Image (tube, rainbow, N blue to C red; front, side):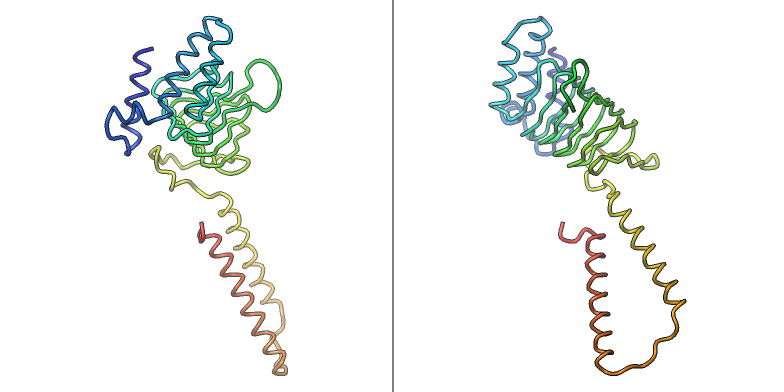
Amino acid sequence: MLSTLLADFRIIFERDPAARNWLEVLFCYPGLQALLLYRIAHRLHQAKLPFVPRLISHLARFFTGIEIHPGAAIGRGVFIDHGMGVVVGETAIIGDYALIYQGVTLGGTGKECGKRHPTLGTNVVVGAGAKVLGNINIGNNARIGAGSVVLRDVPSDCTVVGVPGRVVYRSGERVGPLEHGSLPDSEAQVIRALVDRIEALERQLQQLQPPPVLSALPQAESETDDAASCRLRDRVIEQFLNGAGI
């Protein structure tokens, strides 16, 4: 148990550039404190001691904002960054050196008995606010984007984004665990493909139409207004696709 606690302590200096010294990490990192209390409660839970493990878990939640059921299985070197609002269910399994951000839920989807919470492999990164629900498996080195809702198994070395979560393959490109800005936007890619298709259909339609006939001035003004409106809509679409305002 001591070697596991040391691994939990050392991983913070590797993955958090804000970690300055051991005293600050020991007293000011709720993720480390929650894991320490969890490991004590987990030992008592394995010893079939009633009430006390859940009481320790409840106190840990009160002081850290992180709720970890004593029955969960958590490996060594796990880092819960910030941690407020993290929930780990009773039958959840977290592999070694996982990185979990605030607001993450590793929960179930019903009232069934037995294994009902997710299993995370080694070196898994779960972004802020992500929800991983049900008895599913998240493969080694997988990354789950912030705010994603994952309901199905995720293969190893993959990235999941969106609601519901979609697996996005990175062509073997390895990305550091802290590089959240490199997550792909699958929804924007689909919308861009649809916009490209609409533009192609509009060009085909223009080729089929006869040349326009000159008309009176009021109608020309109307066409000018329509063109300005189209340019406005195109600009709104372009801003969305480029992430403007986010």
